[in-house]
Each structure stands twice: as C-alpha cells, then as structure tokens.
Image (cartoon, rainbow, N blue to C red; front, top):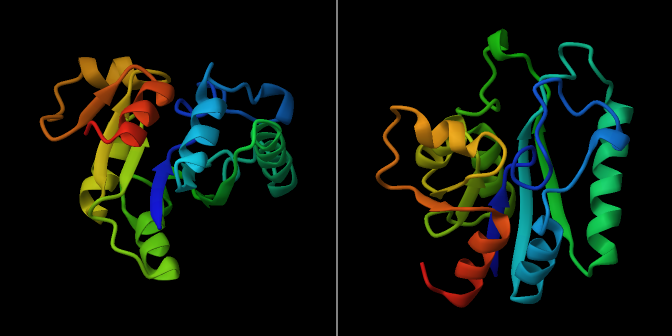
Length: 180
C-alpha cells in the first residue's frame, strides 16, 4: 500500500494569516482536490497532517474544525477522492508539545498506528517547518510553491534535499508517473 502525506493550509486549501476559522473560509487551491483524487485512483492512501493552533488561541473550536474538515472531505468525495485520516496539532507554538511541526510527532504517530515505514513516503508541505518535520521523521520532503511556498523558497533555509513543485497537482502528476 502506498501512502502520501499532505499539509493542509497552503497545499490543499488557500492559506490565511488570519487562520481558516469557518467552513466558508476553506477554499481549495485550484486543482488540489482533483490531484488527490488522481493519487487515490493510482493507489495512494492520502493522510493530512496540520498544525491548528487556532484551537489553542480560541479562534475556533473543535466543532468548527470538524465542520471545515467535513467540507474538505465532501468536496473531495464529489471528485472521487478520499483522505484516509486527518492528524492535527491543537497546541499553541509555546505549548512544548511533540506534535506541532516542525517536530515529527504527527508523522511518528502515523508510522506507529499504520505500522509502516515512512522512508519512501512523500510529505508535501509549503513551509520550512514541514520540511523539518519530514526530515526528522524520515519521510521524503516535498515543497509546493502555493501557500507560503514562495516565501519558504526565498528564505536562507537549506532545501537541497527537497523536491519542489509549483502546486499539488504537478507534484502528484510526478509521483503517479514515477518521475521522481
């Protein structure tokens, strides 16, 4: 069984510095949902890992987060796609948890729960913290230019081992066609 791990904000949906607080604010990046459905048809099980500190900050509650994810799942299902699971960190940056990216806690939990090796699994993100989490967990770090991707590329961070794509659609096209 093949797996693909995705960050949410900036990769699947448009990001917002004001946080995605309600389902109405969740807007897919063009082509992202079709790309996930394509990955599913090619035999990939898709899992999402996402920092959601808006919970700890009181910007939204778990019911709103669930409603946002329900919208994501429903829109994807209409295209024949499916996200197997959504792992999220509800903590604020200073809470000291192990699940908040750049720490690898959510990725390690996937490894343990599914009893799989992550060394060939792509983790697609748009920030350097996604890259750091991927490296720490031993997944393949992949960066898209959507969301905060361009800002990440313009930084002084070392991205030499990172595959870079314009968006999730081009990333999945390459993954599905085995051109990595």
